[in-house]
Length: 333
Image 1 (spheres, rainbow, N blue to C red):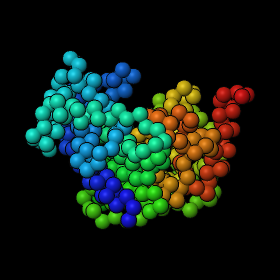
Image 2 (image 1 turned 180 degrees about the horizontal axis):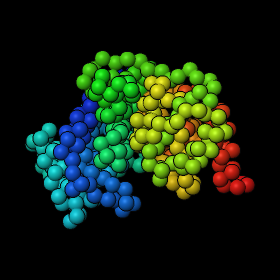
Image 3 (image 1 turned 120 degrees about the vertical axis):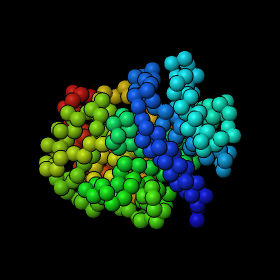
Image 4 (image 1 turned 135 degrees about the horizontal axis):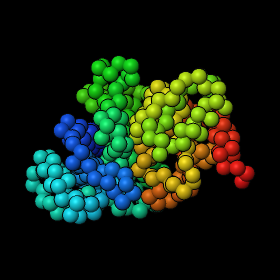
């Protein structure tokens, strides 16, 4: 089966990163967090998860990696305490590695992407604020080949199999492979089940999800959209690529990320794994104008604006409604 090795290594890699991040969070404190230049938080877990993921990939594949973090904060005076914690956690898994080797593994993440060759896209902790709050976050890993996402693994340590039955299972891992569908397993049980998007064709009946953080997506525009589509259900608001998982397994029919202005450009690692997982589950993912997501132009989705993921049948209705709202919000083009 094509991509069998990549799929297997991807699952084990994400599983290890989930275990490490949950171990850290069991004793998490505000001292484990520092703000980056853009004022977004980064934690000990971000660096540890990236180190673990990159080291696992480097053991099997001689391929470049594109990831969110690097060690620049860790080697700064204000990052000294966090660096020490990162070294301690990673050395528990890899006791023979030196500080330089661990920092080098974290820094092996600067690939610029493009439409030629293969590379891995890594988001070690997607939804860092959710992680800090003890809520939803994701660990995302994708293999991109000739500009196309071909393997996606999404670990959601706090997203249980049934949203209304949190005690039944611990966390979810979603796996999508080009042409092979999407499956899901828990952190504790390797048995996989196939997942599919909902068959809802009436947007009035659709359940939608969006970012919990209002800074990430316009919740004002979201309310306008729900009015245009006559949606009666209340939105599910969660952090991270977990939203792609909710759409893929049918808990939600729509995930939209409406840009608050068009200057912000989405990053490849924030969407690559989720895109494939929804697509292989039978759904559809575009930008807010209905354009396909283009993962071949660098580290960002420079040719796209915003994100819309749906179960498929209602996608054109949702895009039409978004265009109405954006015209209202932006004025004549």
